[in-house]
Image 1 (cartoon, rainbow, N blue to C red):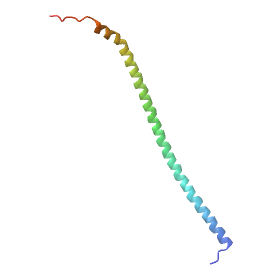
Image 2 (image 1 turned 135 degrees about the vertical axis):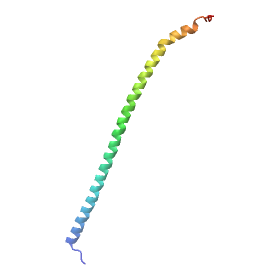
Image 3 (image 1 turned 90 degrees about the vertical axis):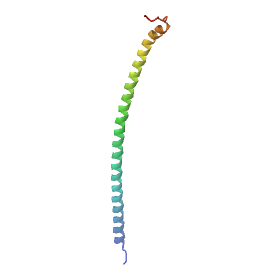
Image 4 (image 1 turned 180 degrees about the vertical axis):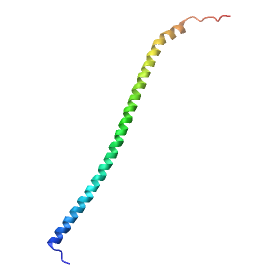
Length: 89
């Protein structure tokens, strides 16, 4: 069988079409994978934001507790310096 220019042109066109089809389907697969990755990143971002808010709340609670300790520290030292009391009875 002798390949003519028309046959070669048709084979080349089919080859390009085949490569383009495979390439486009690969792009669609990557697009789906990127969408999945982006969705996971969004979920992680929400979790990180929640953890940051929890950490900030815990930090504020710790600061309040430290302030309370600072307030009562003077009273504790005063009681420790006071003369010992003898028990009744």
